[in-house]
Length: 194
Image (tube, rainbow, N blue to C red; front, top):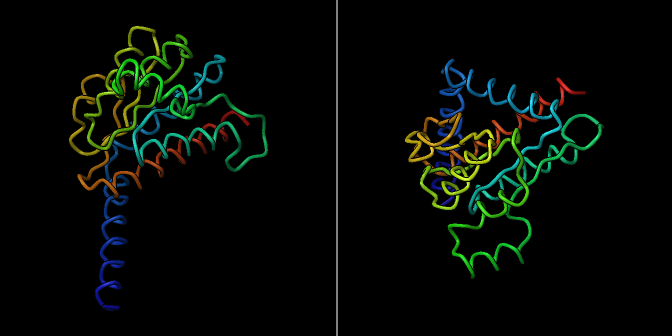
């Protein structure tokens, strides 16, 4: 039993490490992360905000990244306007009940988004209907869209202004890499603005 668990640990860490190494070795992917960082810095310099949406673990990632920006990351500094669109559960359940779960993010974006803001749609498959609806709504509003997804990209890859595809089809590995990228973007923003 202990041997099996230890092997599982080794395999998981090895797989995760391989995905991170693949990102590091892909200069085009690294340039996309750089571009995402630059777009976020520009948005903040123009008094805009960052918005995030995802489902399940990706909702947690959305909230995590928004918290790093609105609270602090490495630097004791002024808070930045960053919001995860799902944190009002009364709103979320009312809209899901009245309009369907597909609309929970697009309606909140319509209420809170402005031209020049940035929306991160986080979906490991790139196929989450409510994320796709939010991206479509963002396009109508002049909100720049960044998709964080897996190797395939799903429908997000053709809808977003910028797509960061993690070179993996394993949900856990993709989510681990999404947090890495979120942290890189947060650090880039802090270094540039503060």
